[in-house]
Length: 419
Image 1 (cartoon, rainbow, N blue to C red):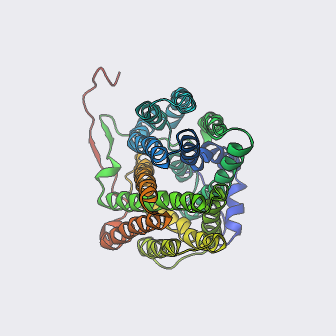
Image 2: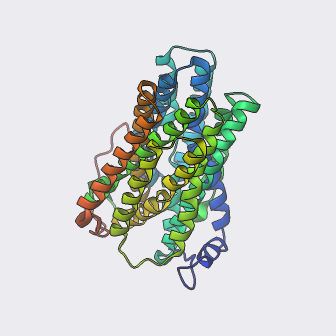
Image 3: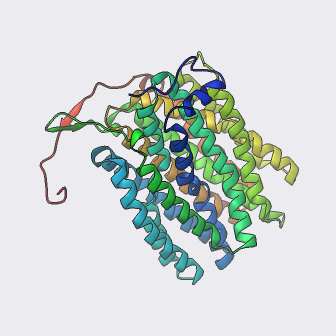
């Protein structure tokens, strides 16, 4: 494992030491470009479908279909990346994604039936490679263990940056260019990021199992299961909170403020992530996960009571404070739990769970907002946070299990499908 950290592994200087190593800055930049659409795709679909059909419920259904299919396909793509290489998966998937996204755009703009929009959304989601998972696996290859917390903190900060700028970009494109412009930009960024990250050979995870054996599957580790379900709960909260902001803005006949409110959530997360990643915590990562999920749950409660836009803006910042710390703690725990040679798959399971959670939260929040108000969607978000909190508390022993030995399972016989 190549070293990328020197000196102290804490303090703000740790970020500089990480990025000054050969290839690190380029990896961070193109990884951010490739996953910028994560913060734009679902919101672009919500805004475009609602603009075309006038139904936030239909918009949530289409967005949920895309996110759920992405969540289902993500572990498969991660497993393939571990066995065949990330480069092959990235280059192949981006071609399929271009086709799926084009079909989705055409279906929405031409006001196709809802089922056809859903089919196109599923095709788009299945070919959306989990950049978040792939990037964290790449940093685990480049970084020494002492620098991993800094690398994952930086990844979370980059995620927060795209969630800060992505909704604003979508709002500007939808209002100043065309409601479909956001999805077009998503497609361009996905293709560019996929190609350049695939060509970044220095960070390519490489694992050569013993002949006749394949790495143990990450999902067979109890601690990974705990993280997967906890991430689903957190994702549910994120999806419901996004819908809360959109519904809140529409209730006040100011839909343009939705992007601003969602971005303010990222502001809180970004600031907290910078601090969290720079501190050398004495608590175990398992306990930090419980603490951060508790703060995450409490942060969503005030959203149900905000009665004005300025107050909701303040509450949005508060709701985001625990997001990055919770995700950093989860990523650090996963790296210590995942079997060797299964890291891409392991991170893909987290991304998958998060995507399914976001999809469920988006759909549930959208329908609850249609039936009641933005406050109903906010309470749904609180419920998702509670699930993550309960799992993080109940699964403490599994989360402290540590990395399993390089256990292997017999390789299945080659079939025509594998050839």
